Length: 176
Image (cartoon, rainbow, N blue to C red; front, side):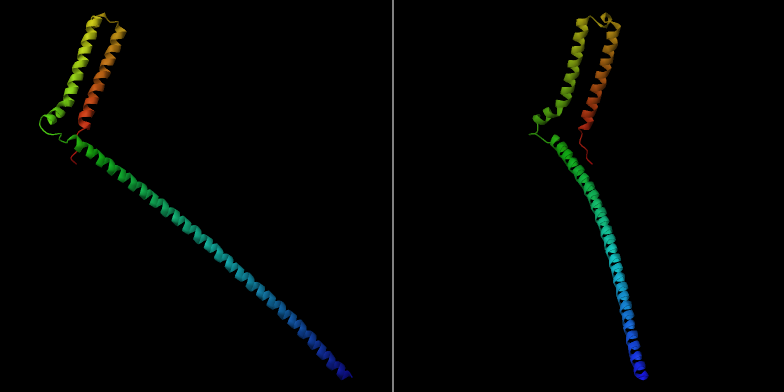
């Protein structure tokens, strides 16, 4: 009997030890799978972070490329505007030099600016003479009025000189 009990005890002990071993093995496998899962999750998280960084860098690259293209487009638009303005100005100069039937028409057209300038200068001188005659000369004016008249005269001369110079030289065509 002792032998049977010993045999049953050995079987029970072996069975219990086998069960405990299986439990420990199962627990270790679960822990191993959990670690594998966490490792895989961490790798996926790193992959996602990497994708976010790549997307952010790509967005920045696209933004910089767009800004560069916009700046280039603005420069090209300014250049095109300048070229168009230059062509328009040249066309205006060419039209100004155009012939209008030749002969007497072109000669009259050519002397109009000088004639208008001379006419306005003569008209201004005549008006100044008439005012001087009506007032009775500068001697009859009060000193404060003389200074105002002197200031207006200088301003008028400067205005006329600037207008004539900018008109005559500003309307010349450039051959360049």
